[in-house]
Image (cartoon, rainbow, N blue to C red; front, top):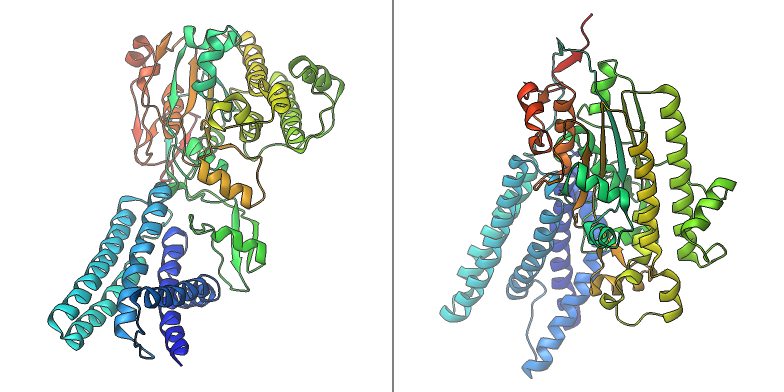
Length: 549
């Protein structure tokens, strides 16, 4: 009988935690309008997953406490004391999860949403403190009914208020009118090369060893520096911010995937972190599929298209994955990775595929650029990022403890050689650069080693070879090379959202006041800044830029 009583109270505790998790999911999915039916469905779904787990933990905790108390603890089928203690502890645990997710997904929230989320957090913190005070008061003053009554009345009001705050999320609406503005014809050229995973942690030492002559040239003849990024550090999200000059809460490109829970009509695109929610896809309770996203903001390429400016763009999503050698790629591969031509380990196959895909995409881009001669051209390679993900440990073995010596001998220079491969690509575009052309090389993020706890988790999940990632947005790099750029200057504080407005200013186009990024004037020579003041319009969603007739 006692077990049934403990079970009943534990189930109520688990259900309370499910309500909080359902609220967190809706908080993160800013593109979803609050729907009380969907909120209820989420809560019930969580009850058969996380709710069961919390129930088991509560039951176990009760009997552990009873064991150490050395006496039997009386409990009712609905025990105010049990619920008050469990609700308080679960609220504190949830607040920790909430705060970690809030910080990780901060780029998703505009100031209004941030205020709403902080209000939710403060309300729940008040609830937790209230639970502690009520428990102390009940035992000190022996007036259990009074303290229970006050607690549970305020508890209901606080939870209702917290959920109510989610209904106040702002809804994006398109502008009603589009005005047109004529501007001068663009007479400048830009080539942008994106190389994912570049980091000065590798570049500076390799330049000092005279292994990256073209990177060295960029630092001597152009302006350069660290490019600040943000989390979530995913390709789709970064690409959206690079192209629009806006944080995700404005362009609303939030995820490569959408998730359907059971057969629910509504889908979510953002799942909470730090609770292994994504692992539910392994149970088929959570079904994952590609998310055909579209931006809520006009990006620079749509601006150029509207302005009838010719451009060539081959960025994310990346081109076709190439797994077979051509004669050219085979020769190139052997020149950089001599001795690894017939290596067959699964991790190295990933590296080889990344290399072949990079070679194919860059060659396709160069031939097309040479043929059509666009004013603006851009390509993005991801191979280095893939290689670093699996082979970072061989470049910094001291951070990873003992490694297999044979593997260390084979792979210790793999990332270094990949940098030399990218250096050769850069040299190709420096050599073909026109006098009136601006060359931009950038990486949207750097790379950092997985912390020990995360390596253990990846090992448990079957990803033992992963040793580095960029989840928390380590800084990337940027280089600007052109006649209007300052030479040999390290620029500090540039963000990925600053590139779009900086490009617009360079081309003589206005910058949207609604862009989160700013023009990084420090990269420009003084003469250019005097002759090209920054022009502003309210928003490219409201004003269409056209060439003069």
